[in-house]
Image (cartoon, rainbow, N blue to C red):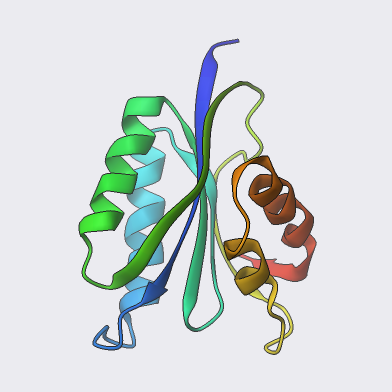
Length: 131
């Protein structure tokens, strides 16, 4: 089994972002990530994005660099990044939203760093509607 790389990052949506940006981004991300063999999840609560990406380090780093350049993502912050020996946590790419609109899970996770952020994200997955 080869060594993989994963990253947990967060950002907030720009006030100038078009309302369709999240839907369009999720569709484009699914296609890009599939072709780059990147798996993971993107959650969005109406204001904050929380992303987990895993795959080969150079490919994941390229995707992160593209997100950092995207004017729709502000306050982009890397919470955790590291190499790990598989298996992958995700079989494919998912996008999700908190099941409860009042849930502050993404805010809480975005305030953590390192392995603590990764564990909090994993614990939050059952609270997300993933599609």
